[in-house]
Length: 452
Ligand SMILES: [Zn+2]
Image: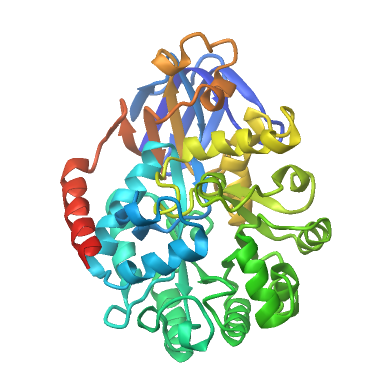
């Protein structure tokens, strides 16, 4: 069925020319944008007409780093002021009791929160597979199917436990043969490589301090063979620098280089502690980046040098990171923090509101190598579109530049969202899902898990 969104005040397309169309319309055929222009809309007799009057439309946001399950562990009292390694060591003991229902419900909650703040495509880094629950990836897929978000799952892994010099306890790490077998199972079952696919899969060993060198190399070889993308955490804290130096005799980026992980099929989360020569290497390799400013602030990890990277060949996207270290999954806030945090070090011109929005749209699409399908409002692209009403409280007095106001005026949520041609949020309400039901179930599970 066709849909026409007409009388739109402004369409910020984020196409190659950064066009912003005034008084425009968007014609959608099924799940694809058929046309987008300004002026009077085409004659439209059959299909749905949606009014865009008094609204700004943007391409849906692309979140490139998250841990959905952590939405069960927000604001945990004991680690509200902990740094990463202490925070992890405490939480692993809670996380190890997670099961299928917890993953399903937390996925629903986390993706609804994403959608409310404008995300239409999200990744998730699920690396927690306690012994008795080896198939949690499947529970996550059930959750994303229920909410209808476009999903790029990453099958994570941990293989280096405390007894072998790593950080996580034995109960949450898996044997390497188990991990490799599950890569294959998950890929065959869920990875759809079609450009407009609603579900793709990448591989994501967790971090240098929870995965062996052998598994990093085997994962890379498996991904190469099957043309899958790769993801992991990198250079997040000073403690990680020390760990890599003492275990491998190398700093994190150099370690990645020696094991063949510096190439364009990889995107790294964080990349906070980088030297200029690290940035040069990462740029030459054409890696992607998930910038997670709120998590970096919350854990006191540091400030990633995005300003120094923005004109290199590093592809920059934004991620909320897990909700235990954020503790929200509000993507609009992440875009705003991306702009603000760089200014603390590099001054007021470091990142503009539109650059931050670009990282949240086309930037993320490029990180996931999906720029031909998502990330901009253009003819032939997926109909992943979000809208903001401009008569809201946050915009009052900010209409001299409404697009920038989305970032500068701290807009917290969208009024409209369409994913793959289907309207999922209308007049700021979810159309398909009763949120309250899932909130109640999430709170119940969270309470149980924190009791242990
Ligand atoms: Zn993370």
